[in-house]
Length: 113
Length: 108
Image (cartoon, rainbow over all chains, first blue to last red; front, side):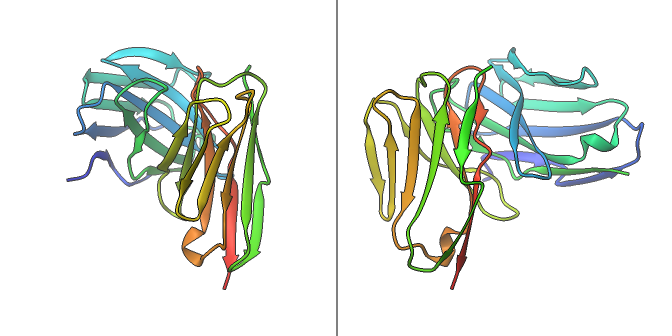
């Protein structure tokens, strides 16, 4: 069983489109995250949810909106996609916030053309 | 804001040589974690350090947390081709900040 699963794995879309990435964890963790990894491999946190409550919202354009319908899911919706949004997006989860190892999904490679 | 500086950015070694990556924070860290990302893969947790001066070992990997809890290092003894990848440190403070990573390549 995959602990943290993201779909889709690859996403190619045109500028201006709206897209969603889904994430689910079956570890029973309380905290979930979205990270963006750019072409230089820098990992930057975007959002963090603890028990469905938003606890981190870094400097991310408001075109990005996370949604957590329950503790096991944290989806990422992106409006009006731009070329600069092209990156790999990782979902992760951990039992506690800041103090426990994070388990990462396989990543979603988003390419905006 | 909080920054975590990680050096070097790249390291090329011959198989069998040692490798070290360093992370330095501008603020005291509550804890620090280390992750490894293989090419094309996702970050995988290696270890967490919490106590001042802590040293932990995992086979050929040695992790250290500085006395002031502002710096940390990961040392690999006698690298192997399986060690190839990017090593990241992660600050446990808020917000969670990754170092920029050290990309290790090992020449057989």
